[in-house]
Image (cartoon, rainbow, N blue to C red; front, side, top):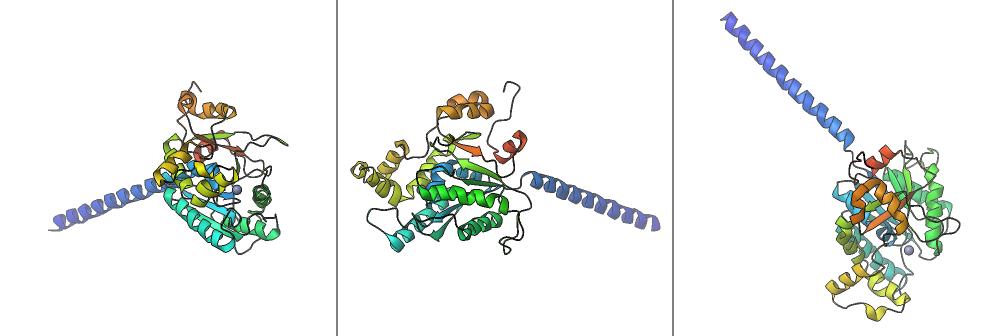
Amino acid sequence: MLKSFREKFYAILCGETRFVCVLGSLFFFSFLANAQNQPLHVIAFGAHPDDCDLGAGGLAAKYAALGNKVKFVSLTNGDAGHQALHGEALAKRRLLEAQEAGRRIGIEYEVLDNHDGKLLPTLEVREQVIREIRQWKADIVIAPRPNDYHPDHRYTGVLVQDASYMVIVPSLVPEAPPLSRNPVFLYYSDRFTRPQPFRADVVVAIDDVFDKKINMLDAHESQFYEWLPWTEGELDHVPKDPAERKKWLATSPRGGRQLQPEWREALEKRYGTQAARVQHAEAFEITEYGRQPSEEEIRRLFPFFPAPTASH
Ligand SMILES: [Zn+2]
């Protein structure tokens, strides 16, 4: 009887120990997997509701598809970007368009209530930018370069530059806890050459999400089908049928930035022989202001490149 009781006792003990071990291993391995697969937090700033979409809509769609957290922030409400609508009515329409654009690729889209065409690099807007970056716990921040034809774009670049160190300084904007680690700050591509041209440090192929990007741009009806064609005297070129005009947008130069010959080197560096087949891409410059990522970190922050081989 005693023997059988002891046997039973050991059997239960061993069984439970095994159970605890198995459970412990599961927790341990899921912890390891989580540590390696933590979602990236990416925040992009633009002056107007559609700027981020043009420069990084494809990249955002790729991040979102992998379960990463992406937010676009427009620093102005876009209330000057139309030939017939103005003020509050236009701002309302553009807010709805931006939210729809974000919904179409699975990201968050915020439009701040600063006036379009009147953005200045004030302390107030700088603090808005610091708050946004901190609250998003950003690993990556994207903004325009401060060389641009449009003053709102230029000051968006300045505002994000001015925030780039301050996001780790605790005594500023105390209601939003500072970041413990400075993010990597990127610039969108542009065509301006003075005082220096854009440098393509990271080029991401977006052929697999190009339709998603066009679908996102298509949400900004007031811009791509009304205001922008009007500014170029091409309003009568826009097809009336919604499906036709989306096709028209995909083939027009407004459908995002075109792959430039000077981006090829960075493309080939990370895609190797696959680079030759790439048709649509987005390029980014790593700014001097935030954390400077190693090649290993770049590959972790941009989990889209094929594994490096001995040949490249
Ligand atoms: Zn703009």
